Image 1 (cartoon, rainbow, N blue to C red):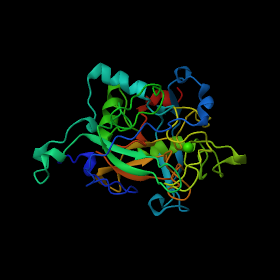
Image 2 (cartoon, rainbow, N blue to C red):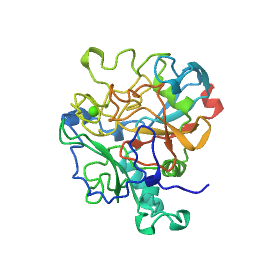
Image 3 (cartoon, rainbow, N blue to C red):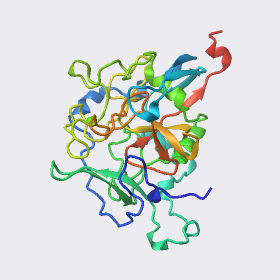
Image 4 (cartoon, protein in one colour):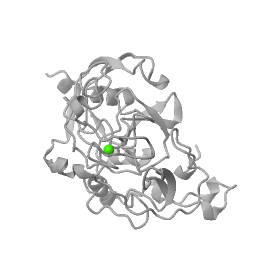
Length: 324
Ligand SMILES: [Ca+2]
């Protein structure tokens, strides 16, 4: 399969990034953390790392929301474990330091793969959501040359102070390479959704029936009209450090919102696209509402963006899973 670089990908739900090869000025680093930083007193190094998810059956999908989630049906998964939080910049940096790995967004596309395109237009980079300046200045997606996991907003931006933020601008192969390095893998969609549901069968949200029970925000999403104004009532405009919000019954953080997460599964059998789950800090009630366990969306496997990350999963030996 010919690799198509991210800059030519039209992602579902995004404006066309494909032909926008105009060299965008690197945006100024936007407010990454809102007033919620004080919520993040938790030290992720103190977490156990992974959480065990029991084998069993549950109701996967939903008939109450978007068509791609239907039908609600029984799914059975074997026992497995999953990272308690999204893979962070600090973790990914360890992987890169140990292996010299170069992510897809950092590689210049090979002109041999694109004979019809001016080689000068083939540049490395990734999709960045650039926030607007107010109600009259909507945020927008741009392809930013030089944007990568190391420079999330483009050249000049850094990871300083962002070691515990989820790594972004990782394509599927980057996420899979990291997981393999740790002796792990990406979760399947049915596994991911079982983990997100935390035993609450058929519940709309990870924690129950209300998005913000008693006015308390449980995850990092977008409050307001996307892409105009994010009121940041959940404490963050943009991504949040991993594990700021309260964990689920399974001990998992940020299965809802913050950044989308890759799963291993094809989207409706299309091997070029994988299912991503969980929604992101850009998901608003008016626009996306995919901050639910049943929700799903496809991304081209070679796509990367500033709101897309992952976590890893592992198999549990049968004797351990049976409790013997
Ligand atoms: Ca938010």
